[in-house]
Image (cartoon, rainbow, N blue to C red; front, side, top):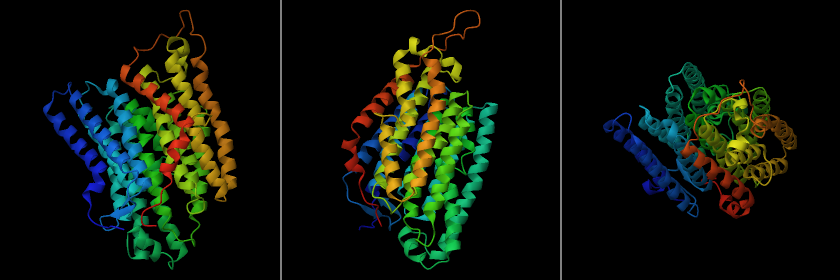
Length: 474
């Protein structure tokens, strides 16, 4: 394996970084209410990052920069999904952010946070993982608070405090593992931790996983997600419930390949997965704000996504099922948020009669929400089917049963949203007034997402071989 300082191997990351810097500089020279050029810069950078990532799908598995960064299938897929998801977020937020005084800063912060998620997914070193965590987290604090509303301020403070606390836990855990193994690189950790005390290794692992859980929106780092999803703008909410999760879960999978069998990491991950899906689902039952509902939904989805992470090394389906589910979840979640952005409605009752007013938009909402449940023939159905199979083959059948029960339970709150959509609109003096004019950009994103959700479910077999790759350095 080549361990050279190969800058060309980091082309997607370099393109996204260049886009963030260029958007920020361009925004400094443009009128505050006319910064549409920065949106074009962000879209171009993200499209370039996605194309360069896709070009590497058939590349050689290797590590670069002295083994600190892996160029393999998980890194490539994470790059592609992160760039594509952020591109959709920028597009669905065009009407919401266009003409606002902080438009260029928003795009720059999104690109920097996406860059942090990309580095998290590909790093093979604890120290770089810590830096990537900070790069993915710090822009989020500003993005959430940029709304300048009481809800946004509260959500930003809660996110910052929890992120700082769990970031310290990650650094503490990394310090413990480094002191035990004498190195921070994963390949050296793998050899250095074999003879280390199991209790100390477990303590270090818990600290690092606590930080990763914050980025994934999983228990115990989930408390910020629903508040941030409700308090931030719709575009920011779509971003924070989707993009950081991708990098965090790939990072968790990669890290667990280094932990010796003397530590039962699988049980820890399984417990966190069960808690995440259960707490997320039951908390979503009583929500009336669709942004908060989707916030709790993403907590439950983190639980399902942790299922293949719990069977690292024991199921051949674990890695490809995780990568497929990440992409499936991203497009389904963004499709639901795009409908919210297109209609401008945040309360469940305000969707009454949408099926008659905007039947095609109501159809997209049905497709995306039923995909989040895992209903065939949608793309998340394939993701859940393969992750459940991986869990069963990997020896955590009890977790698969818990996940199946939670999947059935989640149907309740998604249907609470869909039921008003197909009821006739109320008439009379107490009727709810029609919402604002349909927004063109998010409506277009919603349609694209709905099509991808259906086509991805039908054509999943064609994409599957590209996901079956090995981890670099293992």
